[in-house]
Image (cartoon, rainbow, N blue to C red; front, side, top):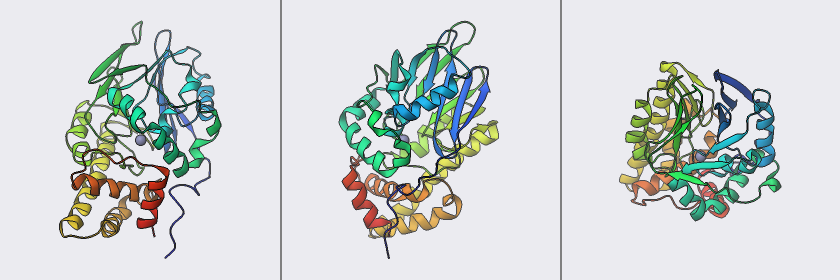
Length: 320
Ligand SMILES: [Zn+2]
């Protein structure tokens, strides 16, 4: 059987972007399953959440944001280290770039390889790739919690680490008063999960428990639409957890009976496709996801670095 086209290399149709005003001065831009981004107005500055893949693409988002506010970007918050979330940073001209301390370490350790890997997997997101000036380096990091006073009577924006999950360094941004949570890739609403850099057991357990315990009433996940209302938030978290648990169970079963990675992929695919197969990037993600679950269950503590070459090898092995 022929190999399927690599990752999202043939997904070239532009997605519809939608700016949603979630509360006074709180914005989310969603894009039919492409990476979501957000912004929160302070009294005399803006905090942006996520930076998209290139300055060219980020500038387009900023132009939309500028229809609502012309305050300067003081803080750019990066939820994690992935290239399509961080390499547009220079367009924001932010005073401070905030991330978890593990994210800074991951940029140093594997940022360049991830950049090459991600831009080849999904070239559509990397429009204007030549405009990326280099890796994005956080200028302020923290380990557990960091609070930004928004000024005036706007309250706080709380940045919080919930444990290892989609990567080793995911953070969420929480607005206590309107109860809005920007969850990054720790939660996806009707989009498949990428788990190639993940810690499935911790993510599906204590990390999502902690995230759910925040008590959000509106949730902006990494991809997919905004979840509005406690029930929709709970559903998005539950579906994220379910995807992880099915991956763990199916891959674990094949591994325990001495099966192969390819068999594990086929079992996981069969178990997930009815619920998630129609969602964006399902086929794209699954080979990388299964490969990492297999490693995790085999005792490989930290994810093996994805390179453009390793991507192709795993794809050829599994997506045929
Ligand atoms: Zn990611």
